[in-house]
Image (tube, rainbow over all chains, first blue to last red; front, top):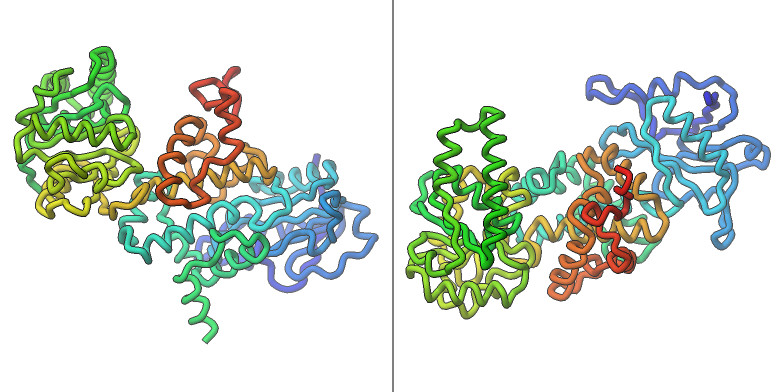
Length: 222
Length: 288
């Protein structure tokens, strides 16, 4: 089923930043923004999200998320929350350009019809779509940030050189790039922000930002 | 780079890893003794090696003459005494500290005093494996990746008593046979498993917490990170019982909560959901 969508943007969007052709950015972001109908059965908020109005819930509403949970915008009800309002984020490795993946964020009682509509809309625009429960880090950052923190701690502890660790990632684990180079390319300061946000919400030690990222954060602040 | 290691032995050559290491050595011109305690395993491994080299010939990577010569360089034995004159022994036996210690202690009585002992352990300490074997200065870690005949990476590590020259000799040999060694400290899991085992456990915990389906986790990792295989697919391939064993080797020496076997993993193993080999794991292979 084809869906039309309206976009309300307030400030910069992390999922759909201005495409820089010189950097080889994926043009799908621009296409998605220009293909909006001005109205439609799906309403998308990009950037800063205003306080939701009751009328908005008449149709599927998608809220672009950054580091926060969807519940920040919708409220929660002891695990029974859920409506036609969903969250989403286009995955980026830190501050790298976003790719094809859309993480669609649901709550326990989210409307299945809304999830289906949102999935169909993004897939029709050429994106890969996965559905994640409304938890810190969604799928990828939840899984990779502890790994990146551990890799940086291993480096600090002298387990191996950064080159050896990255080579092991590529040649032993089959990853397209090394854990250290990937974290640095995505910006250590952004790694700090993501890890800190998840750590604050979970209290789990593996999300405590690595020393290297703390240094990067402090240097940016100076 | 030239190595003085011209003849090696692989202990546990009837297993998947050992058989792969033997292939790596033999195809690089190294005389290779394939040792295992039971002959049937060696026979299977030899058949697999023959099949592997046949495919190499078909793909133009090896001539028929080379295939014949390479197989001729591989000698099977179940008698440890046949390893007396090798330059290096690489053990790829069961991942158990006492088993490896006992093997090296026995080899110390059999092998020439200059023979290097290399362990293919993926989780155990090289220093602890070497301890008490009688030649602690000649024990190194050479951890190959599965399948060894396809994967170039080798994690090379020294124990606390390893002589630098011995480590260099093992390193040079690895380079000579076409592998790519990386140096790691003698720490649990070295680099590869220290990174992978906790990550895979995190994935299992995410499934258990209902964060996403295994299919969506795999899709996210492949699309978002560019991995060739999703972590649930990988776990099904390596076997969920293997993941439990890795956790049991890894957690007690690290006390890292991420390395402890998640409850879902233990339940799946108890239910016989071991992955591809049992027909069911995170995915159902019965209809595949």
